[in-house]
Image (cartoon, rainbow, N blue to C red):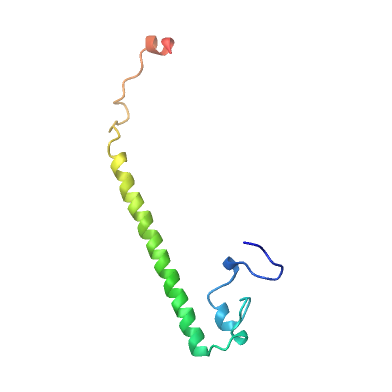
Length: 93
């Protein structure tokens, strides 16, 4: 995404910028939307962001749960159970 001087990146535009006209590229006074419409848009945006966050966390949880399956096939050794390699095998390698 190209950068323009004086134009904020997407990560710099906050949730309240649409209401306050802060650093948002299209402040409220630059549109013909009523304050009620702006509030609806901001609420819709917040709901969409929350839904995307929940979906991302659910996908991450599913991947983590699936990672348990291959990890369960690892051997269950406890410290001291693995025999020490004999000197002859160490010399040959």
